[in-house]
Image: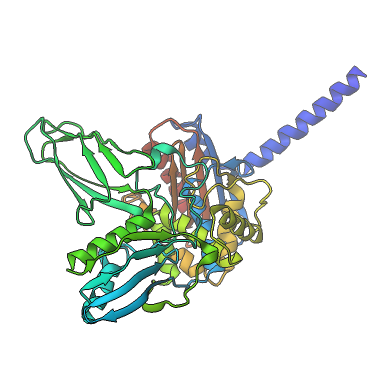
Length: 485
């Protein structure tokens, strides 16, 4: 009996070892050596490479779950293009409820938010105030100098949960983790400038846009240090408030810019509208209100005064992927839910739409974990092999040219603009980067020396070395693939 057990265990070991060898056989000695001899060899590495037909050329840990970081945006943007369509446009409407009497609008103004993430400077030559300018010009053209009524913002198209589950609290002061609202302005940040042009030991001068708005309260406890000393950044918004504490130390002569988040973005939108009208000498006698009741909204007795039509959504997808913009990803995820289910948009329902899309694209959605649409949540997990197969499958979709054009190009544009500049990979790799603490990811398309186009996924989890070193190993792997396929 013991002999039989020994034989069975031996056969199992041989079979299991053989399977391991089969799994690892597809990883070349050169790539394995790059990983094993790197300073991050103790991290978890996933490598998947396929040719245009989908044949696996290189594989390591492809069947394991990994944190994809912003590589998840490849799927969110694909779902957006698939479900909304590349030419979808948002419509943000300014309504009037009242009448013009001489130079006065007697009644309220109502702004219906549509979930448009682009009411900022991204598509208006950097002018984040463009919409308020249009509205002010509209009133001026009508001879209106006074609004005798309230300014009301409707943000009920999305729920009032500001963040996806799992975002870490110490990210929430910074531009890459803003609150999400159906009525949003300037990506829900203020743009701080710090000018350290005073004497050593003094407090640097600050200013911010839009127009030093008092919607936020800066507590400036920063200090100017000796020239040549190290810049030490410290910004923190007191959660639940718009009080932002600044405690950076900056070398004399240093200039710093930082977008910092606000809370209650719908009020931020309406407050900026109010203050901009005042700047244009249009008096507002009423107050600011926000209406969030999705089910009671009606445009009866409302007169449309202006409809802002956004750029097509494929342009937003370009911003989302090239710049790895979490705000666009989460706004569009909630929009997917509202559009597909005709209910108030939520992250959870948006993730259901995303899972349906992933299932259609051959993911095993029973094994993945999704918390957000941007990949910022550490609990978001997926299979590296399925992500790589997606890169092959999505090429067959009509919207693929838009997805491909949204990718950063090595050494040229977006989050890859500073990478691969002196490499054979320059201009030959188009892809999506990903980074959160301990995670570096890279997925996209490599055009090789022999004119093949490979689908490449490189994901490193749980590393403690500098990210630049992991980037270097990723580049060396791409260079090996470039010359050998």
